[in-house]
Length: 309
Image (cartoon, rainbow, N blue to C red; front, side):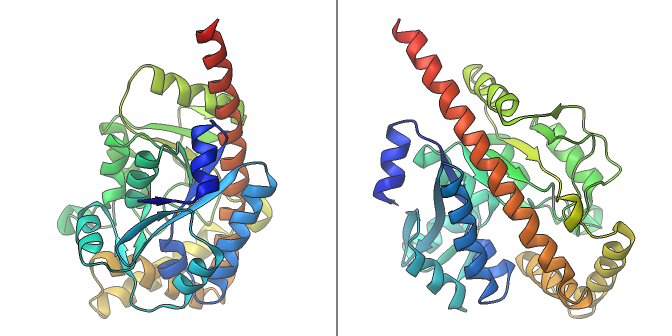
């Protein structure tokens, strides 16, 4: 594993670091918007006082903290494999290029010592999963990997009630930032109430630290709704999703190709409005992620000082 020197130094000195995935570059958006968005997120996190670390696999090497040149290449290449837990040893052994999903990014972030990870939306239980058994590996990762993920809920193409049920069954702490409902990606509200609402990054940091101090394994999910001015009407996005799902079924799209196909189709159907909302929500998540990482670093520093005295 290669950790960029400034990222490694920040981790060792307990300075705020925020992990970013690479699937959003290779599979989430078209070029050049994907590269522009990735670099913009890094810049937002840096300006907010944290160190960004985009994670990917290049020629079999796990990279924590990709360079701008590597991000540019990720955005252009067509042969990058989407990597989850099961794929990691294969891609590393075969010295391939791999884009890390939420699950793989969580695994690598934990190994590197990074607590906070920002993404757009997590994977979850797919619609009709009762017959297809299509459930994202992201959910299982939350059950066993000690990383906090800031996202705008789960992707709206999923079965959100079942996704929350799965997380509850696995004992995953789910927090909702300044909202009473689980975020619905393109829309602020899902109609699904969240029991634990938080109002600040400091409150999030306190919960994270207590979970780690209690030695409770597993991730934490912070649901951060898309800014009000950027959200799409739920009826409009639901109609676009239904149309995209119909096309996916007609074309026999299955497995890990479903999500990128649906996101592309929804962007086309909504004439780019969904892509604009996607970019806006992940920018918002980056700001919150940096704030949480900073608050946690301060809290851990205070804790270390108390232990020494």
